Amino acid sequence: MPDQSRAPILEALNNLKVNRVVPFDVPGHKRGRGNQALLDFLGEKCLSVDVNSMKPLDNLCHPVSVIKEAEDIAAEAFGAAHAFFMVGGTTSAVQSMILSVCKEGDEIILPRNVHRSAINVLVLSGAIPVYVNPDTDSNLGISLGMKLEDVKRTIDAHPNAKAILINNPTYYGVCSNLKEITEYAHKRGMYVLADEAHGTHFYFNDKLPMAAMHAGCDMASVSMHKSGGSLTQSSFLLLGPNVNQDYVRQIINLTQTTSGSYLLMSSLDISRRNLAMHGQQIFDKVITLADYARTEINEIGDYYAYSSEIINGDSVYNFDVTKLSINTLKTGLAGIEVYDYLRDEYDIQIEFGDLGNVLAYISVGDRDRDIERLVGALKEIRRRYHKDQTGMLTQEYISPKVAVSPKEAFYGNKISVPMEASIGGICGEFVMCYPPGIPILAPGEEITGDIVDYIKYAKEKGCMILGPEDLDCNYLNILSN
Image (cartoon, rainbow, N blue to C red; front, side, top):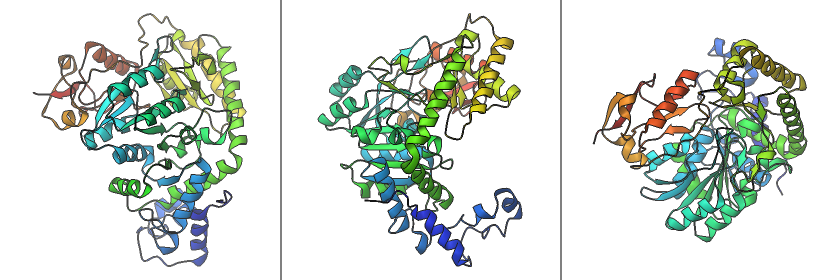
């Protein structure tokens, strides 16, 4: 049984420091001595372990010693057959999952409210998306999970699909019926992939929704850096027992760097140890903080910090109670407006704001006084800026009309036209608000008047629009033939 109190990569790096090895390899800053400004900024403790692969430290592309040992310990902690250390973020983990099971022309079933990383890889692979449109809550203005019957109907209509991808949970904390979807897909011979960018903590606390590996999924991409405490850009890719780990490693090595950061890998190792040994207590505290914040915010008036009461047994099969998702529409303010006020006037940085909601990410690093400051600021914003909500858009999801595959559209012949003139055309690029990074338009989808109105409204409210060639998003690329 792997020892969860161990952190093999950390141990190897500490041994390296003790040995005082003279570096005649990369990186060229040579433990910081070659870049004083960087040393002053990050410190000697950081730069002394920003090192290259060497025998005592193993190699991420082909691990045989300390990285392999760390992977084995991580797999046991997550209940997986194997775990890969990912240093390209969960984007690279999601893309490796899909590339491992889908080739050009293969169908993959997925909800349309996926992160852009999933649709990006369809451009690269040539796989064909089959969308299950998520249910929506018109009062909250958010997309929910996938209804079980919708998923079954889609699987039955596309029996040759290779896989299904599931968000567990969505950005807002909504979970689909992961276990039953997995069982049904497996009966039809499909792989089940889970995007758990926001679900690391599910593995380490029994009060939270079911995690992908526990539900029998074949692969899961886990953003350890979000709720798990590791450094930004560090993630795990988890495999179930029916997946060829050696082939998946080959897929990972097609795109992941050959110079894996030991800062990122050691942070994964340390954070996994912390969660494996203390995760229940850590996330008990997070749940308590989030529950307290919801109670206080809901007493302000007009805001609605929602939780497990929105569970309906299907499209909201479960809810992640660590998520502090707050609907702002009754204040007359778009979520992005509240987001901007919090940052610009109260020095509070929350995770994101969209047209009707904000999300404050609560973690073990938060304190009671931080929650009080957030609640006080929200109260002040309502008092100072409340207005009539007439004319506000609420929907956060518009069902797409897919005309051609993402790859065909992205690489096809395109022309740039003013946004108004693009209506009726086929989009050749991505358009999204970031965060959360869910495309409003993806390559291959028909541009409608509703979508153009939505983009213009999002721009007007101050959302960050990413994806188009035209950085101001006044023009869109559409297929020319």
